[in-house]
Length: 217
Image (cartoon, rainbow, N blue to C red; front, side):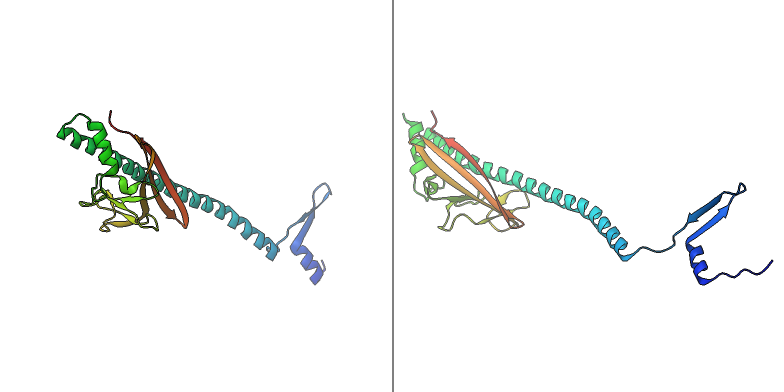
């Protein structure tokens, strides 16, 4: 048999396809491409991979932010409710004090003292009547209720090691600030408004709780 010579063109063709004839004489041809990925194909593959990873990461990030926001809203709700309950305690203390002194009109006397005592008396709400506002620091031994300056109630709360919140500045600084305001609805009805404000990632949030206090009957 003579020696077979294969030209460059035939060799290139054989790299990409081959053919054979079976026993029945039927001709078969197969193609096999060995060329690598093109630049466009590579970029498309990278883009698909990036999108497949970025989607779950974004969803996880939003879930973390939502959980953090919900946690802060819950804390703010407790702080606002604490403000309402503290003012209610102030009213009750006035009643107990008037009751201990005796008299025929204990409820009316206690209510008057609750509303109109001098601001130096920490059991009075008069300094917080609208348009004024007050801050609340239940742990302060001298003045738990303090009237806010004209700029508003912006004093931050600190989380103490015992889990309480205070304005003392001896604990962990938080983003929360709290204000209390009393609005006179009628001579025997005072609406108490407690608002807790904070900011998270530059977005302002607030929780407000309202309640009505009336004289003991």
